[in-house]
Amino acid sequence: MQENAILLLNKERGISSNKAVNKVKYLLGANKAGHLGTLDVLGEGLLPITLNKATKLFDYFLNKDKEYITIFKFGQTSKTLDLEGELTEEDKTLNLTEDDIKKVLPSLIGKQQQVPPQYSAKKVNGQTAYNLARAGKDVVLKPKEIEIYNIELLNKIEKNTFQFKVACSSGTFIRALCRDMATKLSTCGVMQRIIRTKCGNFDLKDSCSLQDIEQGKYKLISVDTIFDFQAIFLNDHEFMLVQNGVQIFMPNLENKKYKVYHGKTFLGIGEICHGKLKLILRFI
Image 1 (tube, rainbow, N blue to C red):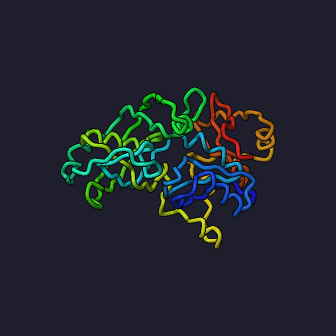
Image 2 (cartoon, helix red, strand yellow; image 1 turned 30 degrees about the horizontal axis):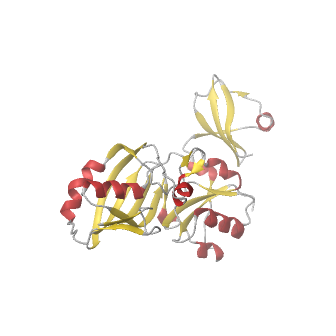
Image 3 (cartoon, rainbow, N blue to C red; image 1 turned 135 degrees about the vertical axis):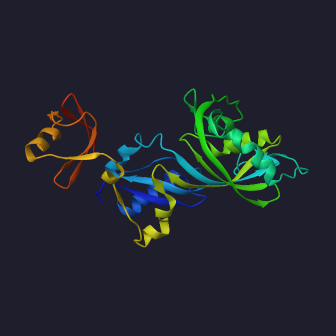
């Protein structure tokens, strides 16, 4: 398979994002594969997978917004802030109501400094935080600015256990949100489940499972369709120049980004600056 494309995978619980990527790469016979944002092993849902030269899109998607459906259980917690870790604290007397939850939600919306979980892929002096934490070493992670656009309480699952929909900026740790919400409720909390439903403009409803792929039931997204830019079509001479890294003089076009084609072939994203076109993201 040589096509540069994106596949939207509905990742199942219990498989790492890298393992899911490698499985898709094998099933589709792609030369290269990557993803546009890790899901934890316990995480489910939307994992956009890039194929062949579409792996260049990682930096482009680095700061895309996300949406999740998640379940928090209050009154207990673990070192990992999810069910992967051993429970370390429990309050059997706690009995939260939906009104208790709704009172603290407004205070969690907006830009804020969030401390990542100790058990995370964050780097500390060149080492991964979760490796240090598992080795019993103290891990001090710096807060990072994130933004919670909205938190909606969907329903109460059982005692002290609630389901939420969260819309947030890239870089937000939902496990840390659970911890911070619990603190405002004067208790502790653990994330029981997380399903990513949106990543940028991609939606879970358009995804497929690994089983679907094995049965040939999948759809690839052409790389050019994800960019909302005006198109430029190059002639043969201009195409030859661009292939050799030469900037093309195009004085009649505005200084902005464009989708660049040669016939039906998508070449990449170009930018006009001072009347000259330069490919800044190449797919040729």
